Length: 442
Ligand code: UDX
Image (cartoon, rainbow, N blue to C red; front, side, top):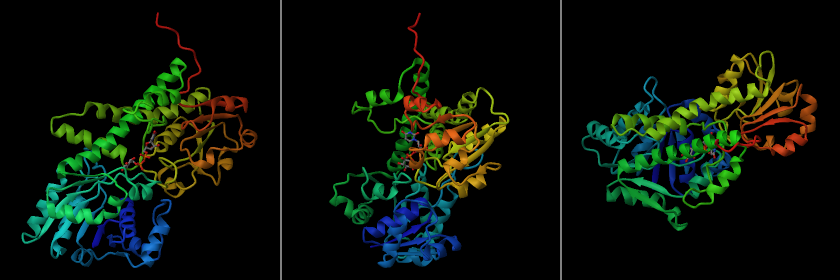
């Protein structure tokens, strides 16, 4: 079995490395020569725990190679995975499929013998059919099937998500393609992973439905958190109290500054657009998108109000810039809304992130980037935890207090215990753990 993986971004690189760990020969293809030569030297362009070792081991074993030569990689492949980017298209919010369709054409030109072409990138419903059409038009003689196989990887936990997934979804109506996909995922049959076979369109929709459902769950608990603050309830107890109901489930009920990252914001928007196009609007998701956009900005207001209503001339320390811990990914991170809003309100912003500084420097101008959490808090009027990196969970609070102008903490990830923080002498603001007593309705 031989796989060609087109695109060595996050999904392509992780999937390629994991398939090679399954014992399959994998060639990862990218147009970017610099990236390929870096990968050849063993340099991993993204931060993902365990990925460097996984790549190194499989390269050493001769199962994983990198190339810019799509033609030769595709020619010898039994299955070709398309894992190129599908960014939000400027202007209309739809997914930009030009890279996917471009890849389909190139694959068609290079194909030799029966080949299964698999869309791994998150693609709108109907894309698989279009990919098949492009291939057929480019090479009327081609012997191929198109298959949809969405990934459900979480950044930071991608390798274990790939190796031990809750399920694998495969969309194809072709028996022959199913057989190839079964062979590829054979190691997962051994651990009894449910493999859901369905049609192309259904598989494409499953991916969007999963991500938008999760985004909805987060948005739900974020709004409940706001209500908790007003009525004096604790959102964590509410989450536990409802989450123990198996129909609801305990995961993804952690309140925060709003979801970010490379998937949820893009996928919620894309599904809203698709649903509108098909005249079957998803009004819940439309609202989720709207609430989440506003929420990120509202978090800056929360910090400003903790600073007494104004941050003009004040210094705010921001701990954590990436959209979540254990990644260097800044895409659609809440910090990209919060920091500029603080600056616009007249604050000087100092910041530190364990892995995201390189990207953040380009995306957040005029921020003083610091070497550590303590450097960041030095001279600050308030500190805000925006991403819950482990190293922010056990800060030396006495040291922080001495460094800061005033001990104000806005903990947007509820890392600390409010009671402990008050005892430590901090004015502590968090999310959804209200202190005021609600009055019964009159
Ligand atoms: C997500 C999906 O989980 C994954 O299945 C899909 O394939 C890609 O998108 P990822 O973007 O890596 O993965 O991050 P995830 O851990 O899901 O978190 C997304 C965002 O939601 C982050 O900003 C995170 O901070 C936020 N979040 C998550 C919450 O605010 N509360 C939660 O309870 C969970």
